[in-house]
Amino acid sequence: MKSIKKIITRDKISTILFLIIPIVLVVIFVYIAIIWNVVVSLSDWDGLKPSYDFKGFGQYKDLFTNEIFLTSLWNNIQLILIFVPGSLIMGLFLAILLDQKVRKENVFKLIYLLPFTLSFVVTGFLWKWMYNVSRGVLNTLLESIGLGFFSNNWIQDADWAMFWVCVVLIWQYSGYMMLIFLAGIRSIPESHTMAAAVDGASGFQMYYRIIIPQLKASIFTGFVILLVFALKAFDLIFILTGGGPGYATEILPLTMYKEVFRKKHFSYGSAIATILFLLIMVVVIPYLYSTYRREK
Image 1 (tube, helix red, strand yellow):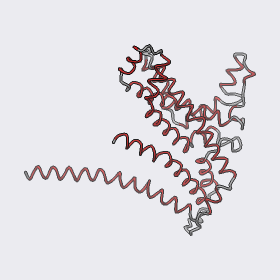
Image 2 (cartoon, one colour):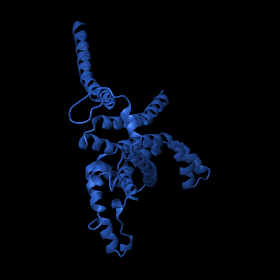
Image 3 (tube, one colour):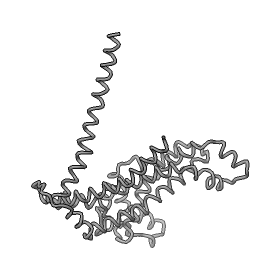
Image 4 (cartoon, one colour):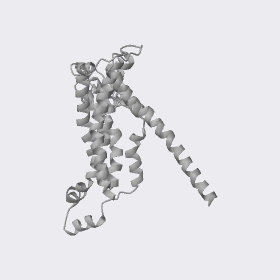
């Protein structure tokens, strides 16, 4: 009995030790970091020398009267409005295609998912080269097949730059959304589709009236994932356009980076980071709550 108790005690101690280390790391690098960021945003820290003298909400007032911040916020909204629905629709379309019992399904899955496996830095450099006006693949290809009049300035056109950035993001994320939707489609009981087929439902009616309405959880999950990414996207846009031309593709994370690491406005940059955090929490908390209720 004593030996059994010793083994149980050792197991408990080892379990506690394994749990303590990640918990401490999360507390330090997540929760304390968030609190520290809020403290800095309320201070007068401006420059390389730290200063924690309380300034109040002055930085936040300055944000909403600053044209660059408002432009970045509007660009983030445009990114969400184009990228999120585009990725959901494209992912659903690819999932429906693969649900047709195609041959070599796994090969097509791999092809569709391959862009998502690339790092955003690699994707940024790849599409920056493709969008190049004079030597890019797209304009060169259009000219070689006699469609040179369709040649475009792509991301160098301030009016269309954000749209072409969203095209790149949709290309990268649609395969991931496909997996989410395909898993949702395959989890629908076969009896539902068989009953609809007996009632004479066509292929379009089957998806429109039976399958897609049962994908609410998959759609919601995909929506939250894409929305959170759209709010904190940085590396791909930083490599692809750097926020240009002008401020046409500058979003909040990029503005925060420039304010902190180029202009050394630490308190101002921290205020932008706090706004970003609050925006993400507005999305994540309802999702976690709905997931908890659904599991309960």
